[in-house]
Image 1 (cartoon, helix red, strand yellow):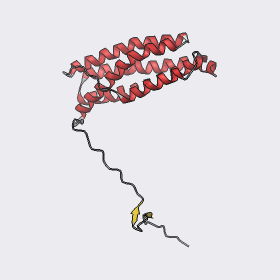
Image 2 (cartoon, helix red, strand yellow):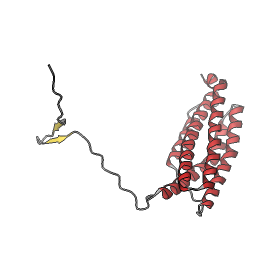
Image 3 (cartoon, rainbow, N blue to C red):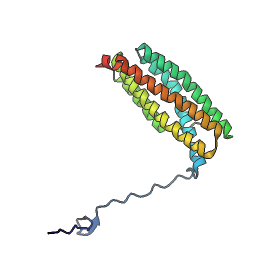
Image 4 (cartoon, one colour):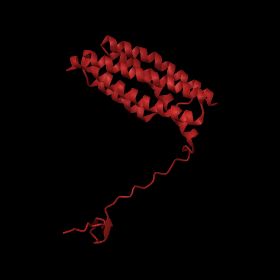
Length: 195
């Protein structure tokens, strides 16, 4: 015997006995007046965002290095600090290439990641546990940067911004190498020591 499937919408009854659909409708978010209108605008906004993020990292990395105890981890952070200074310069070169003055716009995502890193340092005792936490926080930052530079490279390719594309790909390569190095440092007994 076949059963017929019900196609009626589920409804709920309110206190006034009127029927209301349980399907929620999410309203569209209105755009701000200065919202990006095309890919070029979005590209420039993203450039300002990562410029702020890289400059914030230049300030944050020495704090992480000071709180790390493992020599390999300290060396990795120090190396990446120098690379990050280079990333800032590449971004400034990109602004110049598109005829814009370098401008930073606060990156809420990076601010959150840096705040999390500070919390990890405060919430762990110095030594291998803190080192493991610093690596975890650092890799979250690297993954954010990898995603950002990959996206910016895709935008630059479409917009035919060749100098920016080259700079983004160079930085992307360095971010991936740093992430890989952090994994290697963690895997060479550091995580086991933290156990």
